[in-house]
Length: 328
Picture 1 (spheres, rainbow, N blue to C red):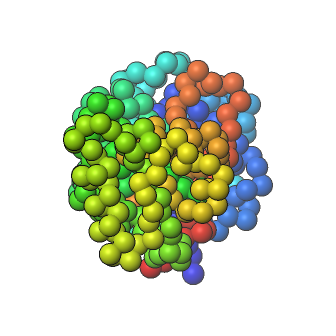
Picture 2 (picture 1 turned 135 degrees about the horizontal axis):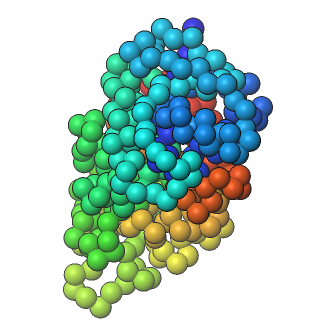
């Protein structure tokens, strides 16, 4: 049986993504990797950056309309070329790449719609320029493009431990308006189902409060009115969950051993300690789509562009995750 390919959308052309992709292809990692890979991006800028950074990797051009029938290689970059007009090989990020990025996503999502790909990995995108306030993040952008708006859940995953923010890329002042009992229950049920179906594991959750020490002098206590009722409802649904616990002690070593997933109320509440602990050894998975979408857990890092200092570990972990999951 031939495995379906992993579709890689290269993302922002002036990010570090091509560099870490080149490092993956120059390592021994892909020799034992069981899935073929199709990359979507600009052949011209890929070659230019490859030349500047002194990498030498052969490119196998394939037609997007014939991807299913194409000869795919392990040691060559199987590329669907998307035209990108540029003057500088390395440059500052701007909105000039927006049309190119959109076309890359359109092709990748169309391949998934046609059941050609097994899953998607996308390189980093500039939220400031590409999303332009229309979406709070790439997670929400893809969800909307695939008609799954409202079902998406962001899971920052490490094999030992993971985190989930209930709200994602929104200003802190809006968090209290966004969190609700229904939202918390829906997201935790989605993650619980994913762990059971795909990872063959019944996870244990801890959920943080919103306020310091889960306390407030206000009568409108989010812990009392939203989080505690959510926990009680989830326990009735036979989900293993404890909380709310205070966010300032949630990431103590004893808790990292006790729980599989810590759920927080907002992005930085759980992603900051997660990245401090695991650095590049984590991946961003979008749950709730018809397919698995993963992004390496780093940004565009434009200031490191072309310096050959970027760490490819998160991309390796993204690719390796497809070996961990089970068909449901």
